[in-house]
Length: 198
Image 1 (tube, one colour):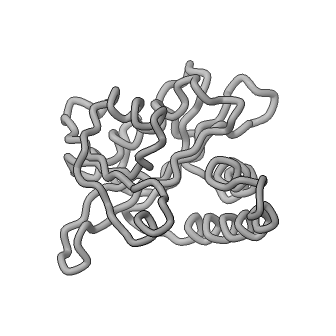
Image 2: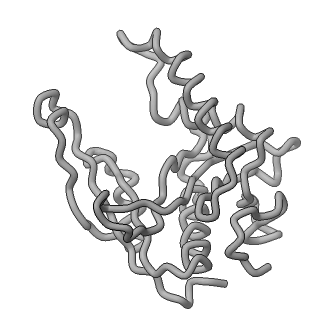
């Protein structure tokens, strides 16, 4: 099936009809399950900030629901669903949109965000499948570059991105990293080959 430049992919959009994980466009009914994945991946329920977890989760739910309800030409939310599960169990999520490096220019580029995999499905190739699908979509949008951020201390993710051909573009700096000792955000870049579109 050829990927259309029209953002609204059909619900049965998938990279391989015979694979265990179906990569398809997210639907509004997926929001609760995707919220669980994102909240669990990016926020802790432990420690002094554990009390804020329900509020953070609610914010994620509302933001994701609003993005799915808003039709934008160059934004898509993809999910990985376990085809072998008794129900359409969600294994992962990723979003692809256009962003600008510099707020003073109109030059934009495809940017990957909110890549997360449910704990039970990690280290099974789910993230790689979603990233490769993002590459195909970026090429369908007629772009040859793809960007994403990763925390400098997220060594497992950095290893995956390196394996897939992502390279360092820049290290972001803000005062919170210096004052609070937080890990820095690293912007990675991959130049895409047209042959990557199947």
